[in-house]
Image 1 (cartoon, helix red, strand yellow):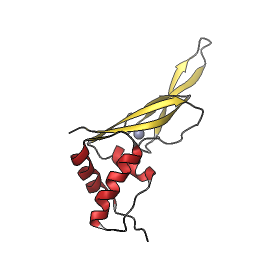
Image 2 (tube, rainbow, N blue to C red):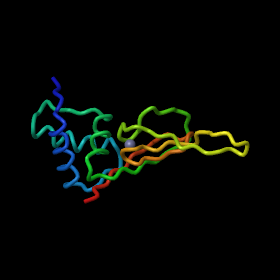
Image 3 (cartoon, rainbow, N blue to C red):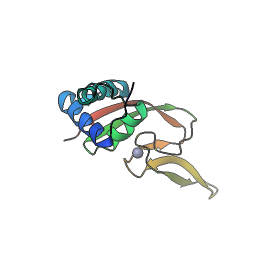
Image 4 (cartoon, rainbow, N blue to C red):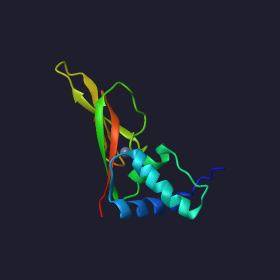
Length: 126
Ligand SMILES: [Zn+2]
């Protein structure tokens, strides 16, 4: 059986994991370290990759570096923190407005229109 930890418990686990390791070179490694901390609170606790990424990006003491590659996927929400994305527009030579990229209003993630994230690196900032 699995149980879903409360947001406050996840934040504690994130903090402990970062105090121990300082940085993580992938989302998978970060998730494993967080699960290790969560299991000390309750053996049945687990967390999804998506929730790990979003809560860590919003923790306030973690910087997320995103490696991107060429890709066509369109994002409605920020692929780092699930925040609202704002379109970056540019005027073409003919005076037409075109969308050239996106910027997150929450975590400041920025990408061009034809980029997708392939790897996340996490750093403790304080
Ligand atoms: Zn974001």
